[in-house]
Image 1: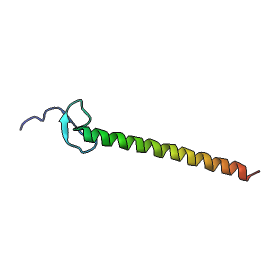
Image 2 (image 1 turned 45 degrees about the horizontal axis):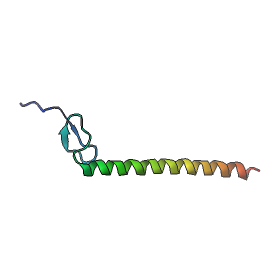
Image 3 (image 1 turned 120 degrees about the vertical axis):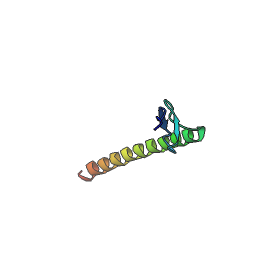
Image 4 (image 1 turned 90 degrees about the vertical axis):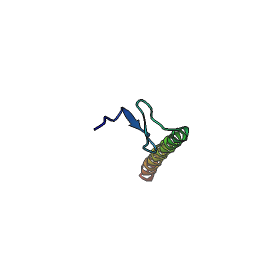
Length: 62
């Protein structure tokens, strides 16, 4: 049985890559950055929706 050399897997596509790296290509790195931006936008939108709901709740009791 041969030993598997130390490696990681690409965060996006799962390909085996040398240890210490996160992405197998520039394309995967760009896809990851796009995904992170989208996730941040969704988090901000959720906070905005929560704030609007709280404002509506306080205004409706007056």
